[in-house]
Length: 191
Image (cartoon, rainbow, N blue to C red):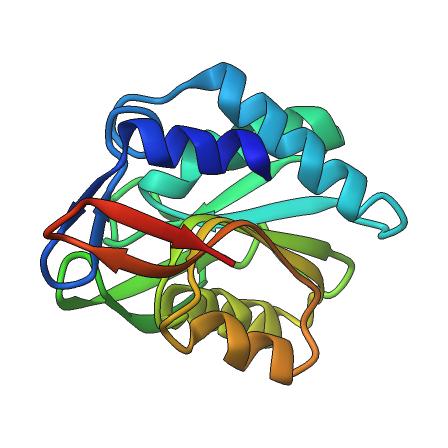
């Protein structure tokens, strides 16, 4: 998606350790107009799918998923990274390793919000190694839900997450795929 690539070039900051900082518009301060255009692209891409629910993971995926949910006209569920006293009943639980945070999280989704009648679109802001997506896929498998597709804002194409999901047959729509980043020059190369 050219609009997102232009925004990454203009406002993204390449840091060492394969980190692309996009907090000024994607995952700290949110550009809702950009999110709306991203949601429109996913809506176009997945138009023929019987999506009735969107699943994401807290926290950075929630804003994008909420805009997409409004456009698709479906509820949005987010996997929580911690148990809370408000989460009653039984839950699906899996573990994911975050590339950004460098740690493992237990993620949970209440069984009352996802089940075998659901046709799910998974959405997240970033994908590196695919650990978060694999965790959400596992939750859907536990629930017996059908995964209709995966929408990613920015995929790091030089890491294996996206290629692995495509090889497994998932319909993956990444709006910007970064093939290389140079922290010395700040250059980002897109696929």
